[in-house]
Image 1 (cartoon, one colour):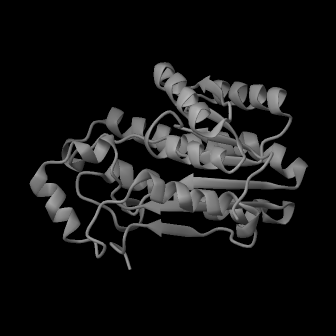
Image 2 (cartoon, rainbow, N blue to C red):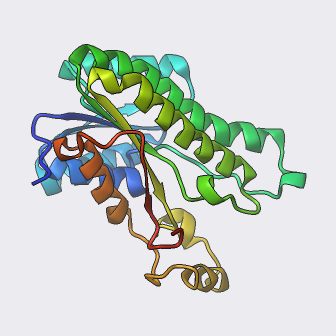
Length: 248
């Protein structure tokens, strides 16, 4: 059974959607969750929900994941409170969709900062702790868009392709110290983002998915749970596509 008893799991973007589902799933298997997000009201709601459903209390931090100082403070406060960090889930992400010809520099910079720079900052900070422990699990949230690209999402595709690349490099750097790094590449998942799709766009997507449904945050959370577990100790530097067969 994929238990995470006494493991401390730091999850960015943990207040809703996939991040919250990962926190909930890991807490249900014994982990002590640490939630980091920019939206304080949602953080508190997530903390209460996790507590009521799993019995696990969560540390919560309001943090701009692209701000190096705030990242360092979050990691330090986590270590001061918990004495260790066993699992890092780099989940925080945004979209700013626009055709390349009309995409603003701010749209580009914002997506690359939140989606990719944050992975660098948190991994750099937490890796020192994990190497000293000689144990750690890093799970990065990529996307199938980072593999195949998508019109109107050049910034998002670049950021998620970068997540895949930094995952592979991290795996090679840290593996000898007992730290694994893997990425999850979700397909189209039922979240607030996909809720905004027009029905004709939704149907067009479903026609490309052999399982004929959108994924759920729980589908992704189950994969994160496995990669964070001791049972996945020999999986390193891999990208697990959770996409219903959309990419084969």
